[in-house]
Image 1 (cartoon, rainbow, N blue to C red):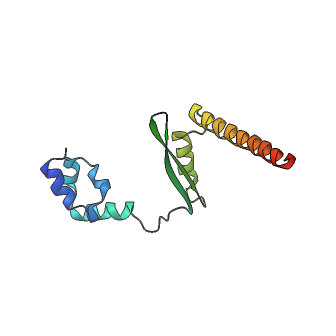
Image 2: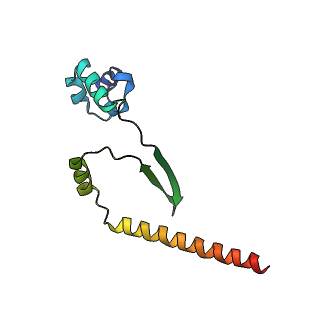
Length: 124
């Protein structure tokens, strides 16, 4: 639960930016209005466009909800940032392997089912 100081500081945040809501009250208390505006401008830079492909949805499975995000477009990250993100988010993980295995099996099953369905209509 946020205290009174946090609520007062958030009231002064530019456009009620939710990113400021995650900051501790003592940090918000040390920021001037100009500093908050500068942080807001840096984070919400209008030149940072959204990618042309941006698909986000969640799926219920096994009593929980899982999300899937597919983002695509022209690469605008620099080499240093790409290397840093490869280190933080490696492609070769068990979860990624199982996901690709599941997607491949799903495509295979759907292909076989469509061939069987097509074959049953041709012989009909």
